[in-house]
Amino acid sequence: MQIKQFAAKYHLSTDTVRYYEKEGLLHPKKQDNGYRVYDDTCENTIKFILVLRRLGFTLQEIKHLLTLEQKPVSASCNEETVQLFSAKITHIEQQ
Image (tube, rainbow, N blue to C red; front, side, top):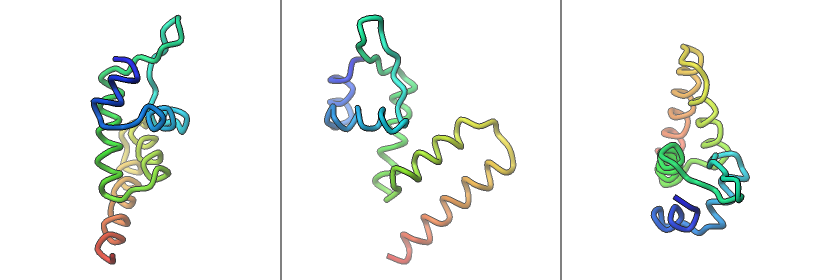
């Protein structure tokens, strides 16, 4: 789907979608005519971003988690992810 439909589906502005792309959070495919195409991978990513934003994660934290998601499964990767979530849970509980 194109950016207008994608943004509308997730109740975002097209500027927000472009910003997420600029920040390296979303990676739509580009057609020969320059139009962005948001596929299932983009949809899964935006759902993940929106949930984490509601939980109070910063864009930097989300970017870090998305980077960890791209890495091969390993004990160190899992530990880093758990630590990040644990720190956020502690922060939320303190508020």
